[in-house]
Amino acid sequence: MECTINWMPATGMGFVAETGSGHFLTMDAAPEGGGRNLAPRPMETLLAGAGGCTAYDVVLILKRGHHDVRGCRVRLTAERAERDPKVFTRIAMHFVVSGRDLPPAAVERAIALSHERYCSASVMLGKTAEISTSFELVEG
Image (cartoon, helix red, strand yellow):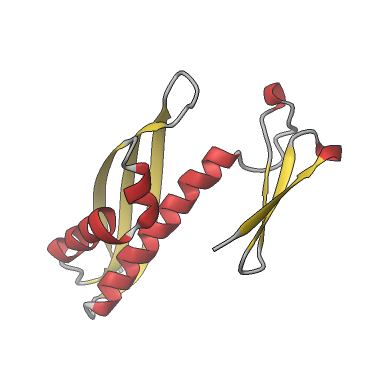
């Protein structure tokens, strides 16, 4: 896996990442950090990546279990250390999973498997952050 980051001087502190798969992602800093608030912060991007990684796992695990999953949303809230490096210290992940006749135990198991085994981002961030998970089911 690879990624190339390019600073865009005309934006202040804006950066464009080109991923190894040929996709682009922009990032920017807050105005107080020299940016113009035109894109997510790099740490927000990291948090979003963890959310995407775990949501992918949960959906895949439920589909492989032949469950009728129709939606998955994850809201992540994080706290960071006060001093540099300002690593994540706490991350809460709240899943809202929708489908037809989804057994709560299957959803709970899918989240646990993602968190403990499959989501590389969660496992990595878990080295510095206490990660908690919760979920709710929506029929439909």
